[in-house]
Length: 249
Image 1 (cartoon, helix red, strand yellow):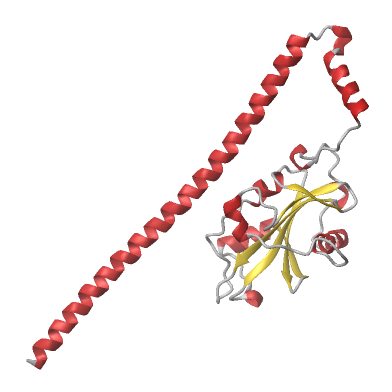
Image 2 (cartoon, rainbow, N blue to C red):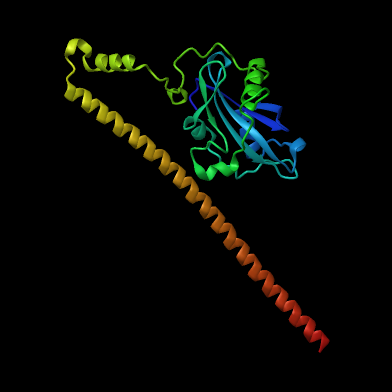
């Protein structure tokens, strides 16, 4: 995440926010350096928030976190929160234009949808609005007015332009610099931009596929380990049975 954004995690229970933390605290949970004893044994509904200048919520990802009986968070947590918020579709307007929103019903990466949850988005007391109010209270101590440079464009949703404005924009682009920019140059720039977008998209897909393959390999290794343990246990059981039969004889 670009340093122009603050990041926070909000924990829910029964549709209400029960606690909040900075992203660095969440990382401590995942590393096992901190615990969630009050949510032990639960699958906790959480929300990741990207917060821009003026404490404006710019993006949300509603995900679930498994917590063991001893309060330790799942060390295998692999939901790409930053990727999902950057590639999310339009959500509600929380006062600064539509935010980016990712949840179970709106997930850009299908195999991660099972690790997300579906919050109440409309109506009074909906989850995004609860987070907006919580962010405004700023109990996490974010510096609201220090972000004064251009924010991450990946979180800026395009606003539709009227047809006339679109034509004017295209004309200005085509005849910039007093007409010294040719149509060929404009087309070349456009083609280059398309290729850059295509390459970035392919790189994102490759990263996700690699993460998926790594996860499959981990599961395969664990299955092989369990099979080996089962074989050893069967052999041990057989030896014990033979010993008992020998004693009986």
